Image (cartoon, rainbow, N blue to C red; front, side):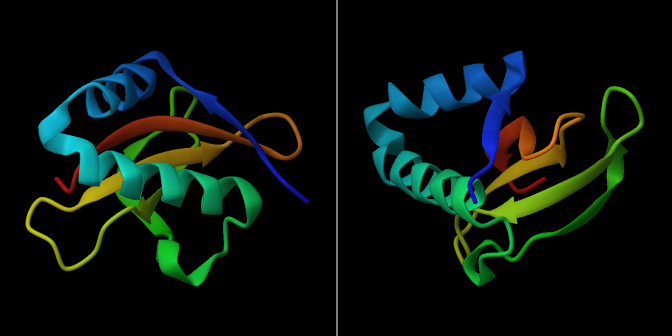
Length: 98
């Protein structure tokens, strides 16, 4: 069963920057692959999902961090929370590991 991905404005902008930056092409591909895994199976082992305690969602939701890259300087991460609707994931950020 797949999930619907909903991108908050910041995440949508971050994805757009990745997509249109030739120097970030490799990272964009890694993020796209991770988003596909997240959509198809949020428990995919390659995502290494874990609770991210340093922030919360707009309404106090628990934030999760998924790996798009690993063992890479400035590795990209996807930050999300499970949406208010069933089978919905809200992406709040796509950025280098803080």
